[in-house]
Length: 315
Image: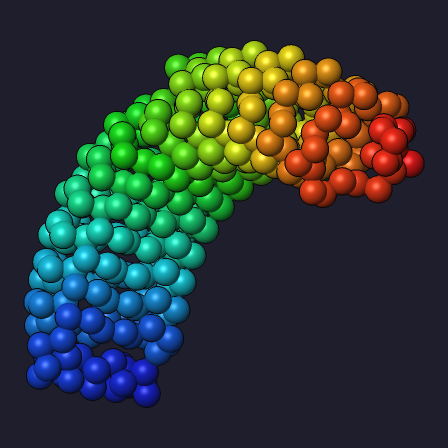
């Protein structure tokens, strides 16, 4: 195959890195269709960026890069990962977003030092149980895939703080919710969820919960346990009412209820004294509880809802 300008540039950068004993190498944006075998000689590399190329596969020689801490393979055409990836046991950050992955190999279990794993915008339909071995993960991004269910193995990721599952095909969550209890951020937007399990109560450390663009008709009373929530997005669902349990979310700063079927709000909303933003557009509200006027921290108020003297009907 003819050597392209990008191939030549990659070869030159690899040679220079070898001469200098470099620990960082940037091969991004070179239109590479394959990775030069010479990459295997850079055994001291700690950071390798091969993003924004046209790679369809990784060579087995990738196994030689055992000192890598960061590997960026985002924005390529990868359909699978080689078993050789199991040799990269020092990896802390792995970016595989914007590829064409349909599955993850069991070899992923070897990457026990991973803290960041970005798999968004692929074609994953399921996750292997082997993911349970990634017990050091702090962030896992699985948004924009084709996931229909979640493995119980997620519960093993006890250090996980941010989990992104937006834009998948989830229709339900298991009743015994298998999410790590230390989660701070959970994004489940743009799925097909019709209800939340009572098990949501176990996520007592959540700061952000995004459930927008689902099919929710109600919220469980167990939502009262999410006392650390600061932002709750319930927009674009089919909610007809809010439970009185909403009163327990006293740390809420942002509450988005746009585009639902709400006819009224509970008086208990007055307990949300830290609320700074309340979005109620496109509902069926005829009136608001007078108690809403006591939310003195509100900074963003929709026109027609609040007046200087109190509450009036939306326009």
